[in-house]
Image (tube, rainbow, N blue to C red; front, side, top):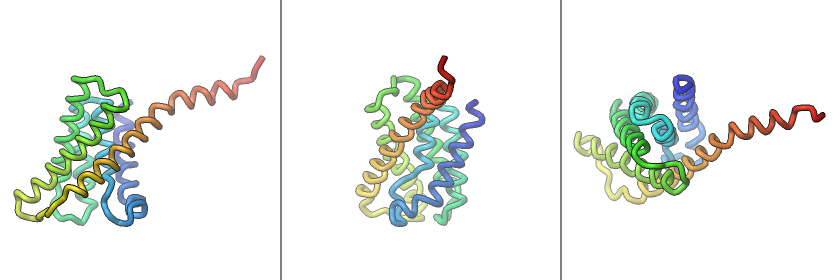
Length: 169
């Protein structure tokens, strides 16, 4: 079943990132919905699936963006996907607080790797990026926590609805 919903999650995140995000945050990149999807997949499926999801989603996101270099986002997201998946397998990350910490840390590591590669290649500089990193980490964590809550409540909601439609004898 993973084979079906992982590409759907990537497609939905990319569609929302490219269409709705600019309206929600006034055109600035305060959320990375693709990273949220990668972290979610990594936490639920493990490090290999997280790494592959990060690679594919990041490269597609790089290709759709106008930033120039294709592959930096894919590499950053694959590193984060693998690390989150590995940590998620070693520790219990089912409660709200550990998930929140994972989203915060994943967003911060992603920003550090992404910016680090651009600086190492001499393509961009990021003077004082801490406020942007913090706001993106908080936004990603909020969206990620909401996504986990919604996805985890769906199976129960479908079952309750099915039972409520059943005729009572």
